[in-house]
Length: 528
Image (cartoon, rainbow, N blue to C red; front, top):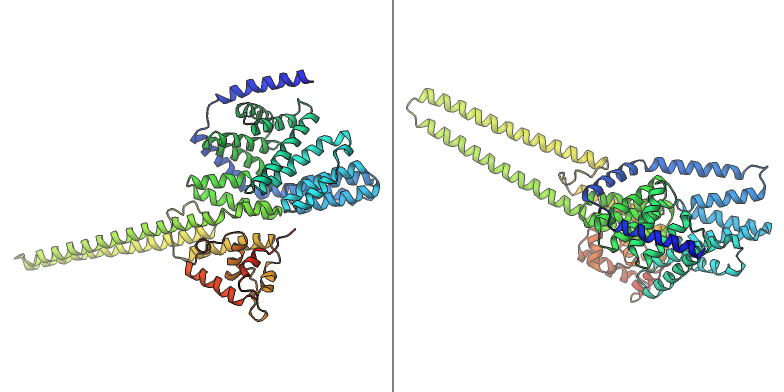
């Protein structure tokens, strides 16, 4: 076995050398693959409906009276797996129920499989402590030989999710990175070295070791052999994107992220990172339209999938995209105003020409003929002037209508050429508020009540009918998310710094504990 693995390692190294000298990704490649991704995203709901139908078909097997309990448990495990990257709450629910049923039936091995699945996905709900408790309850020594690969894979994935959450805490991140690495090495020992899963994880191990050429060779070979809808395709191409990023190849980074996002979209996978990373990268490259679209879809995916971790990661970038849109609109407005000024100057010039012509004609001796010609000339200029004004006003009117239609239809590709009044910015802000309110209240469902508990009873916040959050609460919500800088809050909510400062002082005046109010707000708990 060791000799065979050495041979595999040798050929992987050779493949890595070949890959390292492959033709690099070009601007044209990136533009082409982004068009494919745009096309697939338009079919997003179709793919989601297909996956939902598949899950419903499996659920139909659970209500069959003639089905054995062992068959139902197998179906529940499959349903949970189908839900795992589609709706985390439902996945964990099925895994927990399967675990309880397995214990009741005395099926210890089956119970271990359900427990491993549940522990894997609990961190996505930010239930990290519960995930660790559940995983710690499963001793490796007690795991049946046939489930050791599943055990190591579960520890690997769970540690990866938790590590991603603690990126800003180096010590904790290092701890879980080491757990992830150790589990992956354990997984490789359990897998057949010729299997696709072994090659995928072997490529990731090489990537983590910094052996980029070797990792790229393994992963490119794997990607060439599997279909875009294969379960490993998105993960393999994402790792290829990481390799490109580590080498400073931004075009390659975007190209492979797009491939990963295409696979996620076609598989109706909602728990994703590729699309949000690609959105941030496109924002850096000033493709604001696509960046906004991709990040908005990524945030909607996270909300639909009930993945609190992804909601936090994606929503942090949305305000910057909105600010970029606002800047583009303001620049477009300035261009329109400049055009109007130039038109006004042209009108004045035409008017002066008309006056000069009239004055010249008056001086001519042939008063009758010259005056008639002067009147005709004047009529022509005035008619042309009026026609010009009419055409311009009509174009301006149609332009504004076109802007309104495009904005109402949600098309932003022509925004660099379009403009309108501040109403558009307000509409965009309202749209952002709606997404932000839904996302935030998903993480902090009792936030309004918690804030009111910190205020004097007679000065508590009363929301209007249909409101989820108001301006007061959004300021506190941003503070709770760690955005404490007044100027930054003002920028995100489209208010002046003075206004935000006034709001914050008023809150302190309404608080039961004036000095500790903001600290108490930071202590409001999210869902466990």
